Amino acid sequence: MQAYAAEGVDIDDLTAQNEPLFETTYPSMGMSAAQQAAFLRVLDEKLTAAGLDTDLFAYDHNWDKPEYPLEVLDKTQDVDRVQGAAFHCYGGEPEAQQQVRDAGGRVFFTECSGTDSESGDPDDTFADSLTWQTENLVVRSLRSGSETVVLWNMALDQNGGPHFGNCDTRCNGVVEIDGGDVARNAEFYSLGHVSKFVDRGAHRIGSTTQQPGGVEDVVFENPDGSRAAVVVNSSDSARKFSVTESGSSLAYELPAGAVATFTWPGEPAG
Image (cartoon, rainbow, N blue to C red; front, side, top):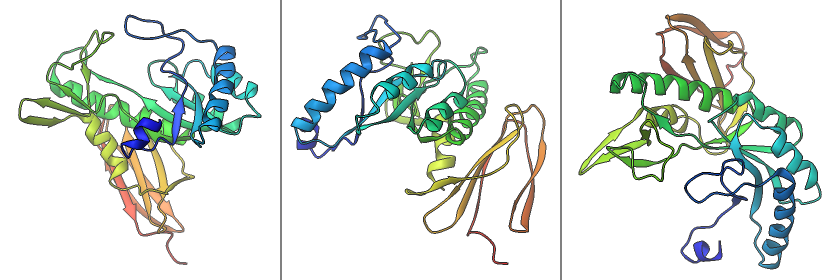
């Protein structure tokens, strides 16, 4: 971290390691929750001795084992820089993150890789990815306490590389680079529906939403008071819905699998 800082890159947050429950062909290591808690104590001492105020996050693995970060947080309650837990998308459901929030921890969503659809048709891949990622990584994850949505990788070549394995179907980045050509994948647009309209410092505000498989939303208030609602229709037919605040509303019909972001200046007067 000191070497990064010397190059102008300050690191605010750090996890102990990537996917501590997944031992595989590329550099990896199994680490139990008890081992991670003990390691974070040592790391805390080293960071303090170095004068670094970097925060630490537990886990950095899938939604299906929330008991792991909960154990780490329980065993490190007296370590102030251990702030919460980070999650990946390859198992379980996004709502598992809420258990960490309910325990008083912060939540980061730090990894999901896009893959090709089973049909192999690029059009299917785009449509399936846009709907699934917006539903799960944006709407459900952010509704379940996450402060971030990070996709892996940012840029890959036309073959989904380079990679060290575990991409049985092609891994897709946010953009695809083929020589001098750059293609924006569905990942680019699922992130864009948030990043273009939700400003730094925004916070999520309450909203009703249907269960997975219907019209789902997540709504934010920007620092200037303006609102942004990201809505996805994950059903197989067009759905009508309305957005209402303080007596003012709009009605809209969203096609099957479509994503839309609605913005308005702020809470209507009166």
